[in-house]
Image (cartoon, rainbow, N blue to C red; front, side, top):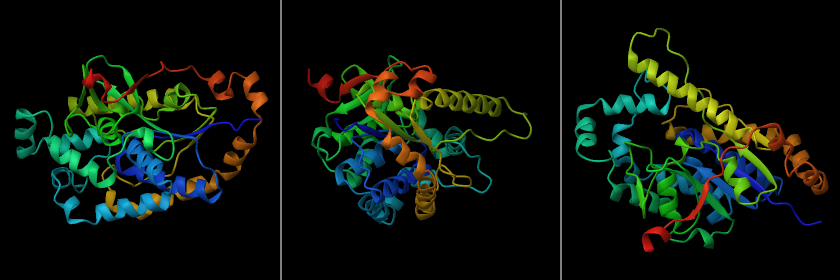
Length: 324
């Protein structure tokens, strides 16, 4: 019987996504190598690095070198996106915190993003090689959203740096990535845990890792903006529930107390990913033992029969549209 293709799906969640490295370390311990990696936002960055190196330990070493470098400490986003005492957890809430600062307000009023495209590209270049997705050791794709059409776009070919830039382009923080008529932004706005991308590329099994969480409620609803942010968080969380439900197995590392911006908590966050994956080893091993003929009778995945399928993403090769 032909070997079934296992997709590892890595969700978005800013610094909390460093837990993906720990999950990948445990999969390596049991010699489980995915046939496909699909990611959104930080999941796209970690996934692309893993698809290039083929080693979770090497990904961890690269991230550590970057975070310890003087280059990282001088970045615009690092200066503005510091965790303040009592800061609200949640990406939109944190964006509110620093956009309200005078300098950031001025920056966002006169340009499309707080961080220049050049600085953003340089940061990605420090973590990823200048290669095409087609050249990576492990097949890879990442999710982005098209600002013009509202479509979910799955980037499965083209320059890997450009693809990850698109998938990580948080609106207001990083500039959208132009690709012909498409204007691509962070994939978390359309599919935070992109299991749909795994199915679209022909995966037989999908193991998802979800690192986002619903923002906690505010004690008192005294300001309209607080209500807007809370409502947006609820909608995002419920949508992710639906999108991730089609995975055969979804891991949810315990990331309580890990702030979206706590990149300095690298070791703790990775260790939480390790603990989650080790606790789930019986389920992971059971998943990989299931026979292919049973899956074919059940329309490839029992999980997909239980949950409504999301709209499939548009699969593209980044750079082709602008070249035509």
